Length: 102
Image (cartoon, rainbow, N blue to C red):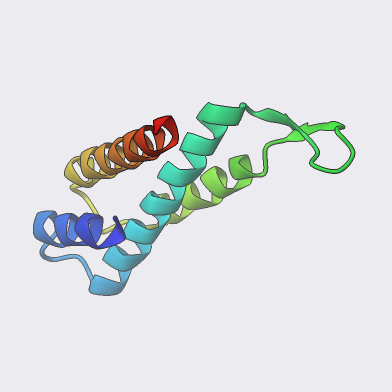
């Protein structure tokens, strides 16, 4: 998924530095994965060994990723990349669901 998002960001931001585009694309991919985990399991989860309630560790990944994206000041056109990333995660989820149904 990262390569498709990277290409879209490059196309939409031709004057942005390539390294900043790569950072943004990686952060967006991480954010989408973390968001999916939080959506599936919630913000409070049970600790895997003790069962004690704890914050979902993917919240920290979402926070870090969003900070990385905000730091990429020269990336201006991001909507297309967000739309692509969301669609790819939905497609991936649907494919996993169909595999588990078989």
